[in-house]
Image (cartoon, rainbow, N blue to C red; front, top):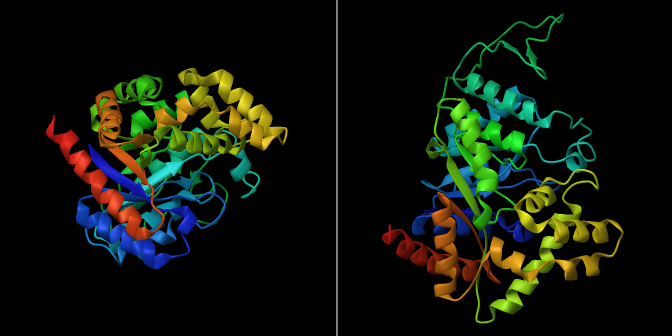
Length: 348
């Protein structure tokens, strides 16, 4: 298994520390670092900064929110980051949800999955230097009835970046299997991985390919602990925001994913409490067992045992949310984690 990490959004204003963490991760053999966006900083600009601070580590958007930029603009951005990073960029795309897309960006959310597919197809055309002529449900290029003609990028063609999809629903998972190079998991319990992998496999086979061609990336918090029960309880309370607030009352893909994996009673109850304003009670209702399932918590042997579950489920890349009070603490914990990964990989 390879290892990926993410930028720590709670410390995102300290860009020197972010660069140091990326540089040290690179030295330790971490495969990739991902930059997220929600309704704060964007997910792209930090990677441009890190491209100038690193040499080999892959740089990914985890994720660009679908529908908030035109496909051509996403393609232009991908070309820029591919060029300035020396081919290290990975384009992570996702639909986000109606709360962010409609509430923050003012863009209709309907048919988000097909819009994401069209975006990926146009991005590849842009990067390949093709004259962009496209007739889709969402995007028609050039715009019919207008004065514009089909054009190709004014920059030299460049190898299109690998495209990763942050898919959760069955239809979007199938789309990921059809066209994506990788999958970015969330709300993922490795014991029920087939809830996701079966749909990805269907899409892949429909496109004449194998799921083995797709980088399946999943993971969670990494907590070295001499009191796992205490730390699992702390993480469980944090899951309440995902179950209750990551979406609208009607549409919460993260909550739905947990429901499909057998956690429906708890997920819906936490969501109900959160939406009704009973936030502390919602946090109390998250099963501690769920925190154990979506993170790796405990001593070295306990963490290795959880990593084996991810590996045996078919996860290719483990995204490690390594904890630590300071950036130096996180680096030290990441180094220790990489030693454990080496031990796991030596078993194969």
